[in-house]
Length: 457
Image (cartoon, rainbow, N blue to C red; front, side, top):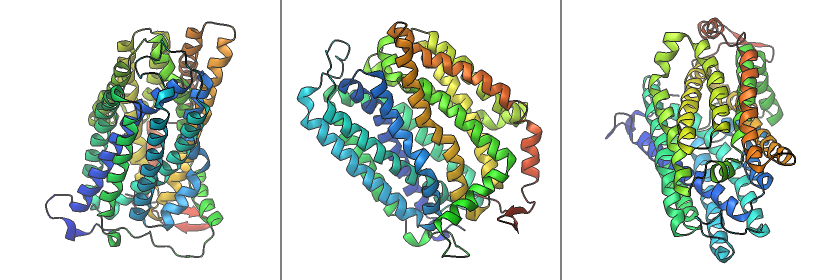
């Protein structure tokens, strides 16, 4: 689908792109505020490591149970309408959380007094947090799937790399540089304030997306509009599963994400009790990841050309092993800050290489579904990792100190990355990745038929 050239006034990429760019940046600012606000609120409601990890499980659960249907919805529905609805729903849900927190403020300790307060689990507020995070996660799945396939309809193909690069950089700055410190600053006022601001960012994002003309973002054409959901899912799943390299990448990424979430599911307690951080210092930890991501985004293509795409991917596993173990053994938050920078740099390198490969070889009309299947494997392991992280803390605490119980998930994650590196090394080679790129125009069998893949945006 070609971009609507009538919108190219006032910006080289067009007014529609400016609306999408601004909406995404503001929404990510709200997400950044939530990065500090939600775990800090959860730690004020309960100090039980498993209950806190359960919040992370519920937040990521939609990627396991809803990502496949979301892919079909994305390929059948107007992407702009879907994004507006998802953001509007997230605004309403976050507003409910804000009001709920405001009504129960008297039962909460001050945001900076968590270590000194005797906290009894607030069951009502805890259930509200769980329910809201579940439905916010569903909204995130729908929004992200739609957003990934919206860009080609408003930006010409030769401008996609430039458009995506600018947006990813802005999202990263808003999500990790500005959002978390702002969330910590807002917490100083009251627990409810960050949630009111977060709700406003979703609402503004919905309005900005609504400014994009609906006619520029129709659903993708279908050969058979009566095809069942099951058939659509089977087609997307079958295409990915028959592609040996993408199947391996999806499974390996899922395991890597599981290990990362296993380590970070109770990170708010690790940061407070082991690294001894305040709310502001905890928020600053995210800036290390932001710097690593920005550096990785600017240098990924050069690193891949210099060392080979396969070698660059394997660096991700090695970096995950080293950084996880160092963080697990550290007691100073500046050390963790540096490790997060390295960790996110490596993760960005992985994303640049693998996303570019997927955009090259996935057929355009299957983009929503194949991406959703890929994310089912890659992101669906997040709630499992979060549950494992909480379980490890509980089990280790039964025979060791609480400090070592909180360190244990990080060390286990580091060991897991070493094992994953050994598995991936012979399978994700530069030769295999380059072969997949050069064979992108070879006909691919889809449900018994020969199909000529197109260059996917």
